[in-house]
Length: 352
Image (cartoon, rainbow, N blue to C red; front, side, top):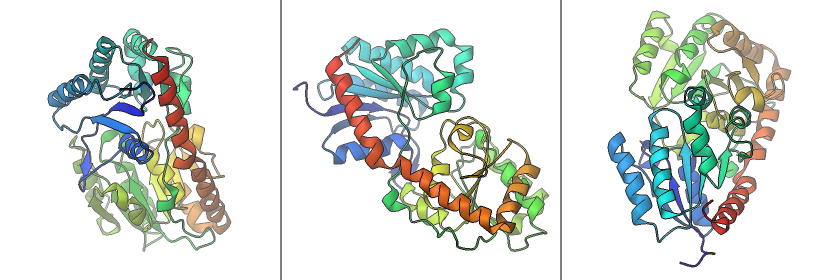
């Protein structure tokens, strides 16, 4: 294989499959690179944890003649152990690699395991993150982390008109997992349903099987908002713009965040955004300009923000217009060339 060949290995948690399409950012990045002529090997789509770890390492070994640079996604928890194992294989093979930091819980994990984090990050030829929050929080473990934001294909997102009247149509797009706190959305609706009887909330996302969906369903029943809430479940990535189109206001209730792709997708659609101010969200969004930011776990504050959007047309128009402008800064046409340059440079530099 020639050294200048565009060939890369990508290792990530590709096991979440909706409608026969892998969800998540890294599969989109791989697809875009393939469109630009890159030869890509990827792992892993195995749903079982142990099998997934084995598949990642085995793929790195078996495909060793088919790539000259690797990229590994880094998350906290068990996924960090998988990354350590894959990195061990890559070092054995003398392959240069890029680590990409994800997840709002990674800084807390790093404080528990600072030695492991520092060793892993310092072993890489380059480290990236899509999040200014993680860039700042992880600087103590490596100072030259590169900011490479998430990207969207904006041609798939057709925004609502900023001066279009805002209806009490709320939409939520995350997984049903404790970290995303969907119960807060139900609590918000409970505080608004009498004032806005036609209010509807659409909750889009798969069940992550940690009991959060059942807790949300109990809250909906106990709060008496079952007539105001729909849950279509998880949807294919390609259908996300169509589902977002059903709302005028986007609720983001998460308790931790390293970027917030779903929030950016809502912005690309011109929705008015109400979000908690955790992690990257307070870095990326400006309160009163392109979103309304509220504290986490505060249904009164979230309901008050929604009420402002529904009763202040000028505010709603400004948030919608500026949210779309923010999203336009994260188009693939801007981000993809940065990835190509980095992959090419790391492949040329070789293993540190």
